[in-house]
Length: 273
Length: 316
Image (cartoon, rainbow over all chains, first blue to last red; front, side, top):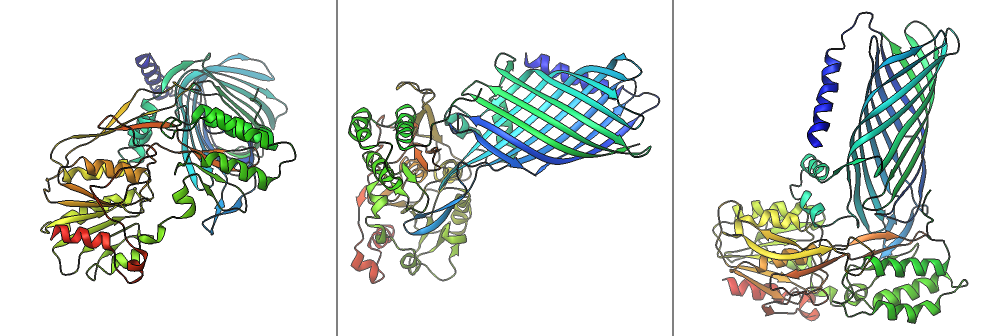
């Protein structure tokens, strides 16, 4: 299974190298916006952590030619808490109970082809590679715990673009990872295998060890998808502006239930070249 | 689709905390606590009109039965409650003094930020001393310490009042002090709600690394040596040239995790069982010294650290 995943990734990479076409249409997009997170991870807490964050940024590179390709990188940070930060003391010495801190990095690569075209719309389907790295610091007053959720996955996507006018269009994209290498924190935050993984005291080696302890899962064990609805307005030949609604869903059951819903409103500046 | 979180009222909070301990806390047996009996005792004290102060008091009293240095309760505007009596009441805390220790060292000793480590040569003696405030990156100093003081008669490694941290920093840096691998302890972690839901036992070893130093070592310990500090002591204790001196350690050997309640309070618990290389658990007992030595407050107040002086005398 691991070899199949690796082979498919290599094939996708090879396709990008050979996707050299005439009439290249490239676009660089900067995204920024606000996100609302509702997340419950029973490994760390029975509470539903909710937070609105204004630290939500991303960059996309899109190439539309015979093949459609898009590479994107996004980062978001959330600081949910049950109570507003409060002070407590340890033998009279004052300390502050800070919020939790969640850091999310999303890397996506899409490659596909237009399969249906009409005067007003196009429909593109293709394959998808996703990498999610979610690093959490759960703070419990005087102590804190590191948690992680990380995926490497392959799946499919569908993109429908509706041309509203000469200058504007509406694009809806659904990304559906179907086969995913999933690595999560252990049942009770850490165990001996987790501690063994940190033994090198090297961030990179520790991350690779955590990933190595993951497992291959399909839809029955992990349900995750991204839905993006984007309105784009063309200022001129080179510059577009956009506003998008993004909904990201994660539901995993092992080793304990995780449900995460993130809704974002992103504004974008697109440069076409 | 979210699982209903615990409600924010006194009775639901009591139930949530008691149930979480019931499902996730490992060493009830080692600490001789019948947790179900504690429920019968304390649950009737909580009702819908229980105030925050009353609830904190009831939960503290219940958790106090565990007498566990890793168990605590945190609430806004209050002093943390530690379930371990020694830590909570700071019994004999003043019998270890860093300013007094420093008076035993030659000028020019090395010190880390906020005394994370202190090391130097003992005045007028061919003995080197190092102190660790906790177990983390500060243990990387052990390498420089051993290199700098390679010709002394012996070493004093002071683990008194060590707050714990990450024992793997000690295990990865101890390599020069041994010429063979030693089995130190084993541990297993809860991975389910049932009383017997545990991972397999995991054995921890120390291994030789670098050129071997064969000198007598005295490791100083006390009631406040806790958690990863105790695991570091366990590792030192496997070495044939090590003598433990001082007082018995705290006895909190499992790992610790945090939890939160619906009212924003926090608590900590222990999801692991541990056994030393002799097959026994010393959770709740601690590691006893080979040579018992306890400072007197009157001596500390006059600048005398009797335990440290005894260690120096043993290494002359």
